[in-house]
Amino acid sequence: MPREILWTDAEEIGIQLQEKFPGLDPLTVRFTDLHSYVTGLEGFADAPAKSNEARLEAIQMAWHQEFEDAQG
Image 1 (cartoon, rainbow, N blue to C red):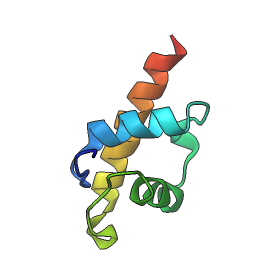
Image 2 (cartoon, rainbow, N blue to C red):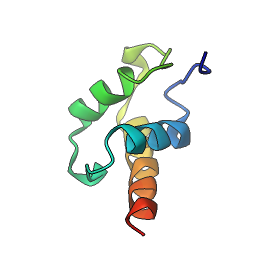
Image 3 (tube, rainbow, N blue to C red):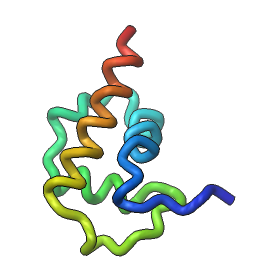
C-alpha cells in the first residue's frame, strides 16, 4: 500500500503528477484542475479543503521541475 500523501508533500505529488500526465506542461494547468488531479492521486489522504494557493503553487513548481527534467 502506498504511503498517504498530504498537501504538504509537494515534491512527491509533483513526481506522481509527472508520471500520470507526462506530456502535460504543468504551467498550463489551472489551479482548479490541479486541485482535481492531486485529490485524484492514489494514496492522497488529505482533506480537499486544506488546499490553498500557496500549496497549489508549490505543487505546480515541483511538477514543473519534474517536467523539465523529463524533457532532457
